[in-house]
Length: 498
Image (cartoon, rainbow, N blue to C red):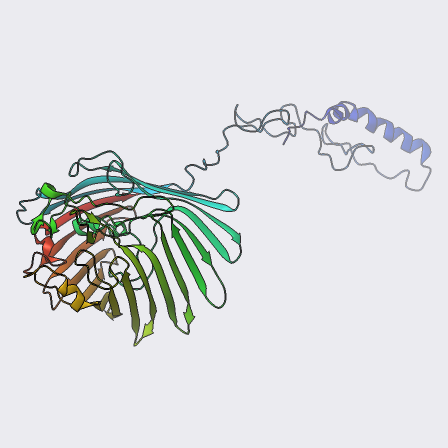
């Protein structure tokens, strides 16, 4: 708005209004010869209250005394609106930078200790601080996502970043681009966390890399899933949906290698740790040591059903060369799964056939045998804010007789079938700010297991505190979980999100 100057016409009319009224009275006596000519005339009004002149615009207000002219009072300097010739107010709030507009993350500090002496490791299992930063940009038809952790870790005390293993001062979790070339297709290229299948912490057809060090020392559960450097094409149709994943260079598990946790080494004939770190031969040639994975899935009534396929390598170093070096044998796999409502809960089922391409006949004792894997599970809320889930898992070795025949004389053959039961209990309390969780793996025929306890409390929307433990048990030092007995630990954590 532009403030108007004083009304000049109104000022002039105020100065001559007395003369105008005198002339009008004289002209009335001379020109109006009518019966009304002698009518009484109203006395003139005091100066300043006269009727407006005939040629005055009727919508204008009477002239006000000096100092009361009809204009808005001027605002203090700096508060008035700018004339059109001036630039817009430069103090207007700036739009957020695209680099920080969607920036989120957290700071996470954790400390964990062993509950017993370990001759092969130190007392501290975890002692690190992580700064997570993540952001997503959407320039045009693309979506770009970056997620990374800056890590201070005096336990491992290695700060040169190793992106494949997640060690060092920086762990790159995601760096990818998503493009939708058609309404029925998505293409995702770059580092990404991939997962599928229906098992709860039991993986049959999910042959993407895992981080078992993180899982066993008390990091957040999200770190169990390690990232893949891959291309994922997702196709959608009414009949079914299809995911195709190509990894141009093999991505291994972040397996137990003795740096953080002690483990059973069959060549050493016992449990080892920092004194004998595992350094296997890795397939690492681009576009030659690659992996292919596929999932076809759809809804069938209330159930989701899926079929899977994979060609690549065992994700952990399960083979030994004639020269005593561990390596990753070649693997092919296929399987299927279902998940849906049943009896007031959720029923899951999955099977997979794993084919050891380096030992199809089962006669090579230095390579893993082919096997069949089966899982069935059920989850239900059994009381208010209390959920329970159960799973039965079996892994059955193929060609057991040929495998046993290839063992060294006197060697104890492993069981053909490994049975395993899992139990998860989750309780929410205190307005669901407190979460109590128990998860237990137990093999009834091998008699080893792993129990995970966790309690977390939300102090606010931003602050979370947590405590828990990993307890390993069993009599055998060569079994899946009991080889980790000396790594039993407890941990504590605090996290600030932003």
